[in-house]
Amino acid sequence: MIIAERKPLEDIKQMIAQYKKILLVGCGTCVTVCWAGGEKEVGILASQLRLAFRRDGGELETLEATVERQCEKEMVEELKDKIQQVEAVLSLGCGAGVQTIADRFEETPVYPALNTKFVGMPEREGLWIENCGACGDCFLDRTGGICPIVRCAKGLLNGPCGGTNKGKCEVDPEKDCAWTLIYRRLEKQGRLDLMRKYYPPRNFQAVVRPGKIEAQRV
Amino acid sequence: MARSFKETLNSGKFVVTAEVAPPKGTNLKKTVEHIDLLKERVDALNVTDNQSSVMRFPSLGTTVLIKECGGEPILQMTCRDRNRMALQSDLLFAYTRGIRNVLCLTGDHITVGDHKEARAVFDLDSVQLLHLVRTMESGKDFSGNDLDGGVEFCAGAVVTPEADPIEPQLIKFDKKVQAGAGFFQTQAVYDMDNFKRFMEYAHQVDRNIKILAGMVLLASAGAARYMNEQVPGVFVPQDLIDELRSAPKGTALRKGIEITGRLIRQIKEEAICDGVHIMAIGREEVVPDIMVAAGL
Image 1: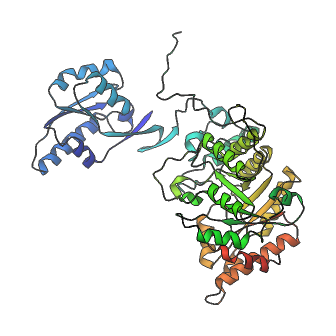
Image 2: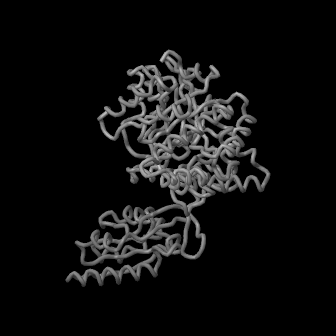
Image 3: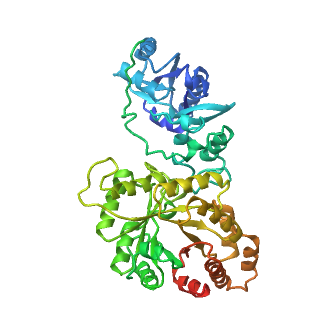
């Protein structure tokens, strides 16, 4: 799923400083699961902003809404009535959600309350880690199901660099060296021959940015 | 220097290279002094490429300077700052300026340096860069297009004999040999028993592979401890740290020179590997002293 993190309150406040009435929109999917932009976070941010405005001698009126999937045109349609009542929208969706609302309601400024970080998974409660770089050319068959493109800080395809240190990464000693993990997994599976193969450089045409996929119906 | 680095490597002579670090800025005075001091004493001068991810005068420009001064340069190329197109262009230019040696490295990560917010490139890794060099030598670019005028390089790579765990490092070493690395420069080694074990493996991979042991000058006991704690893949044995600590005040550097000289002498006398690469890290002016201490 998509992992996002809320921007600092001060940054959000400055973004919307010129408005008197805004709509905060959460999303019921990924960002709800990663505690960044669900119904609950919408409520908290709305009251924090109202308080902050008041502290500065101002006044902010907030409306709240949370749609099931903010990245779908049909689902943001339900915001229509509320958007007509406000000057701006503050989206607590991922970047795709922000743009879906901005495209559907072109006359209303839409602001991002979150920073969209990565495609990841929960490691334990409250901790999410990136494990897919959405590179468009999945390499996991060669690495025992551990992605070196995103879990190795340098995205190396042919083994560890000289910065690997007792199984950890030079960039962050808390982080595991992806290539040590890959080595151990392949060794366990008796598949180290995969690591001995040469892999040519990545094909960055696998996803021509911006990405686009037209699926064939089956 | 009459002999090319490739000829030196194949001559059977004990090879000595040294490292030159380009300046942060355009003041090349000290760099030129180091080049002039060392060019006749060592077999080749190896130039770092934005070392430790700190932006500096380019490796390419410094190798041209060495060439102009009459030395034999080794161009270090990392994959951190340039994609495959820029790496190829630089290699074409290097070749036209008489640069014939290239050391292919992945490069430190951006975040350890002084431009932490920059985008790290890593379009290629070190093994792929070696393949790129060999592909260009076949008269084609890395996309298969014909080159009008080719290149020929003595290409080398690096290896970390003290890496822990060592097995993934050895697999990568093997891949670099397969990719056409003609010589290896190692990360700093201090424990000769460990290094001999690594050399046994290296010779299993390729009997004739040329290996230059990395010799980083230890200027104090504190520096040695720093290497152990902060530099991945480096192990300084306790007895060397004690030896540095026991040196009378103001003589630790002299002790470090003596230790480096002694290690080089041992490597040469016992023919542990084919030569050494001396990294004095900011104290290039003492490289001749190290060589004297080594009996070179």
